[in-house]
Image 1 (cartoon, each protein chain N blue to C red):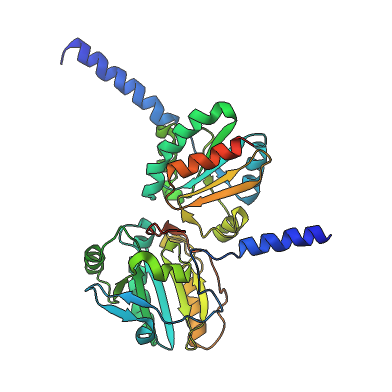
Image 2: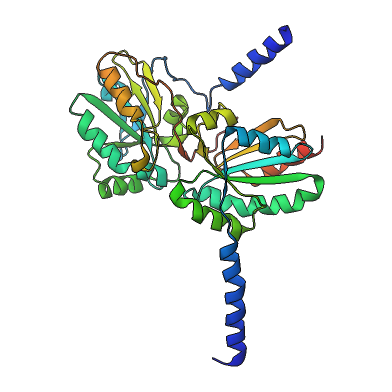
Length: 194
Length: 164
């Protein structure tokens, strides 16, 4: 029995193992971090956050991320007015600031997009795909991590996961789901030494 | 156009058409069917390739995986492809794997809940593509490769499992 328990414990530890040196996860407090504006100047999370903050990793080229471009605009339209601060980040090494700027212009993004040089912020959040989202409350605690909804095809969406999470956190409640799978394209990371 | 050109064109048409028609529907796979499929490969080293037509690195990687599979087949290595495409892209996915010559049968993820399916494969997996999962001859998952994977790293890992 002890062996079974040890095996279970080991499996649980392996399953819960952080990825890419992850520091922030659901339930943990987000420490201040730096990202880069598209003009190359730095920005601090501490200056960008609000009572409720949405951190969202997106891509220029990923078809899944792009399937959500209109939904991202709609999210901004609906939730910026409610006081949610948007921190939208491109962490792909393959997508330079100029391409991110052009993509934002083409899709008429009303929110700013930041570059995450060397995917340092994606590493802290353990973000692996685009699109991938995190909802942070006024205390800086991550209350939701996962996908925007449950289908990249808008016609098949049955659960508005991110909207439900934002509504809950805005109301001071726990989201109905705190963690979902953020399906999409892998974030194209820089090679780092081990 | 001379007679030889006509014959060449006719030959090309006959060669291409049946291959396009031969792209059969992908076999739907949920968590249970996945486990059964892995169990059916016991005795072989198995690499499962989760891919999608919209995933550019997946499309680039597949010919290399197929070549690797062909080269290692005699050592007891199998490659299985599972498309994560939406229903609208299933035909294109079937045609792609067929055109690439991926070992049949070809599968497509059809689960009631994609989250449950992903968790059943590997709780650490976010669902990001490309994703490769390597199983030993006992049917146990021994390694996963998420995102773009260096061909040499993958080949070394496969050889290591094959040599056990």
